[in-house]
Image (cartoon, rainbow, N blue to C red):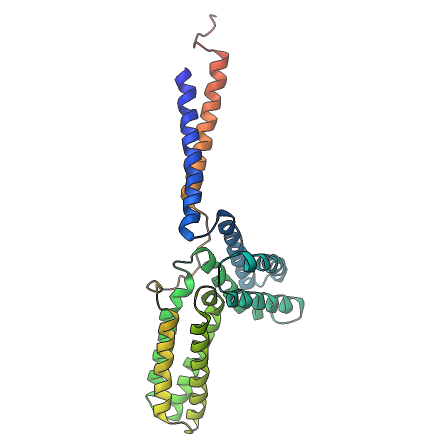
Length: 284
C-alpha cells in the first residue's frame, strides 16, 4: 500500500519539474524571458481578438481590445526586443483604430489597421517563421503582373501596371509593422522609396511621358529591394485562409496535466492508506 502512495507522488514531482523545465526551454529557444514570452502571447491574443472584432464589425469589442493593446504596447515597446520603428507603427495603427471607432466612420475602415496589428502580434510570438514572410510570394506575383502589363507598351498596359503596383503597395503597407519589428529599417525605407519612384514613373507612362527603359529598370530595382527585405527569412508558404490560433507551449500543458492527475491519485492513495494502513478490512 505504501508503494501505491509513493510511486504516484514521485511521478507527480518529476512531471511538475519537467513542465517547468519545458517552459524555461521554450523561453530560451525564443531568446526571451518567460515574462516577455507571456506578455507577447497576451498581446498576440488581443490582436487576434481585435481582428475578429473588425471582421464582424463589432465596434464595442474592438474598442475594448484596442484600449488594452495600446496599454500593452507602451510596456512592450520599452521592455521587449524589436525595432522601435515597428512599435511606432503599431501605436499609430492602434491610434487610427481608436479614432475611427470613436467617430462615425464606416466600420470596415479599421479592418486594415487591425490586420497590421495582428501580423505584428504574430511576429512577436513566432519570430523564426511569422506569417508576414508568406507575403513575399504574394508581392512577387504583384510585380510579375506589373511587368507583364507594362510589356504591352501601350496606355492600357500602363493602366494595368498601375493597378498591380497599387496592390503591391497595399500588401507592403499591411506587413510594414510586422517587418519593422524584425528587419533593418533601412531595408523597408529603401523598398518604399523605390515603390514611390516606380509609381511616379508609371503615372507618367500612362501619358507616354516617361521612358519605357526607365520604367523597366525601376521595376527590376524594386524587385531587388523586395529580395533584400525578405533576405534570410524562411521559404514562404501559402497564406492560410484563417490565421492559426496562438497557443503556448503544448508540452508544458501536457506535463502539468499529467502532474495534476498523478497528484490526485497520490492523494487518494494516501487517504486510503491512512484509513487502512495494512490493507485489513473490518470483519462484518
